[in-house]
Structures are given as C-alpha cells and as structure tokens.
Image (cartoon, rainbow, N blue to C red):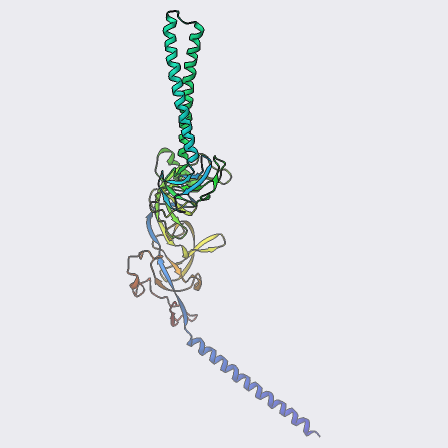
Length: 425
C-alpha cells in the first residue's frame, strides 16, 4: 500500500519538470525570434514632398462676393390701352434701341388723329374769320363808325378763336403721340426677356399695368458687392477724388479672375449694422456672357507692391485657433512652426510671420510625419510655381545635396541603423 502514493508523487514531479523545460524552450524561441525580427526589420523613414518658401513682390487684393447687375433695366409697359396685334421679337433676343417690340391695334388712334385734325381745321377757319372781323372793327373804331361794345365783342371773339386754335393743335399732337405709342419700341439696347402678353390680348396703360416684357442692357455691366470698412479706407475711398481702383471678376465656374474693371460708384454711407459699404464695379461685356443676377467673385486691389513670403495653402495646418506648418531643417528633421497667414495670392497663401526666406516646409505627406521625425525630402515646386531654389524639379530629387539627403536614425546603442525607404504612392 505504501508504494502507490510514492509512485504518484514521483509521477507528478516528473510531469512538472517536463512542463518547466518545455516552457523555457518556448520562451527562448520567442525571445530569439523577437530579437531576430528586431534586427531584420529596418526603420522606415517616410518620404514626403518638400518645397522652399517663395519670396516675391506682390500687390494686395481683397476678395468679396457679389451679384451682377444691369446698367439699365426697363419694364416695358404699354402707354395706351388696346389689343396687341403683333409681337416682333424672339424670347431672349438682343435688340437695338428703337426696335419695335409690340404693336397695338392703331386704327382707333388713327381715327382720333383724323378727328383732331378736322377740329384743328375748323379752329383755323374760325380764327381767320374772327381775326379779319376784328381788324375791320379796328379801322371803324378809329372813325367812330362802330360802337365800343361791338368792337369789344369782335376783339373777344378773335382772342377766343386763337385760344381754341391752340387747343385744337394740342389735341392733334396728343392724338399723334398716342398713335405713335401703338408701336412699343426698345428704349435701350440690350437683351429682351419673354413676351408676358401675346397677340390678341387687350392691355391697359400706365405704371400699374402688367409689364409686357423686360429689357436689360448688356455692355457694360455692374458687379455690386459689400466692402468692409478697412478696404474702403485703404483702397476704395480715393474713388470720390477721381482715382481709379482696379478690380477683377470671376464667375462661379471659374477658378481664377477672367475680367478686369474699375470701381464705378460707392454708396454715400456705411451700414453700421454690418460695417460694410455698398460698392459697384463696372466691367465690359461685349460677348454678352455676363448676365444680371449671376454670382460674382470680385477682387479689389490697389496697394503698393511689397515683398512677401508665399506658400501652398494646402500645407497650412490648424491647431485649435493656431495655424502652423511643418518646417524641414538642414538635417531633414521635421519641426512644428506656428505662422501668421495672410490673404491669398492666386493659389498661394501669404505668410505674415513665422517663416523666413529659404525655409523648407512639408507640402504633401504631413499626415505621415510628426515633429521631430526624420524624413526623406522630395523637393517639389511650391504648388505648381517655379522651383524656388532655381534647380530643375526633375533633377532635384536625384541630386545628392543636403535637400535630398536622408538622415539615418540612431539606435540606442549608438550605432546607425539600416534605412529602408518607402516610395510615396
């Protein structure tokens, strides 16, 4: 009976020993594999696009949003009532000043002219008769051959006939004017809208009547926008003294500014609720591409040319309320640099502070690096601009200079590690 417990004890000891030996072997293998993997996997140094800050002389421009407005806009209304018998334009057509747009039935007005002319002829005959009768009375009164009362009656009849003649003449003129109004012509040259009232409809007259159509001038055209107080004081205020302030115009489907013009007028007061003033710029529109109501991007310039530093706007990062870029030093290490951004100059951003001429910044690949990291710098032009250091862009990455050299990271034992580069996709 004593041998059974002893055998179980020895068996347990043997199993424990086997487990311990197996665990030590596994741990050793894992440690060897980890050490081998650590030595086999080299440190990856990211390759990012780097560009040199541009130093250039610029002129400041301020950008605003506005709307295009016609210089002349007319609601075409009838000045006499009647029935429309003709519409003489196509919807949206260009018309010249004086072109006939609508024709109202002229027959009633032609008859009115005839009636007025007949009354004028009667008034002229009456005037001739009373004038002759008065002249005879003047000769007779000198010889006391006519009573004073009769003389006064003839004189009054002559004067009344003369007044009636003027009234008849005015009636004829009015009838002729109304007859002319039966042809509704374009008061200005421009583009006409659609015909709101068509042939066969009876129209009324006056300012309260329904417009027959609308007409807007084509060239030139206005762009109206609200400028802030600082821009007005710096640039636009000299318009009142006869100065010319250049402006540029771009449409919603354009990336740049395709047209140039000048400030035409400035409002007479500043809106205190918004701190802006209404400004109107004038642009040529000979091709008719600009139409009233279109959204317009307007740039106002006029500052004295001055030197400035320019960078790609996409390279600017945001850190809460701060703006920053990643600067690359001579050893190709990345550093955080807070900047003071300015206005846009084309596709480039003006930097008012934080950078100096000759600095290199990361323009593509900022999400792959952090401040303090070593990088492999791939020199590129600043947002499509000429290479700021004057070298050929294609050869800049191949040149073995400081700009394209790779800093080898240092291991904890003080020996340089192998570097494995990774090509940007």
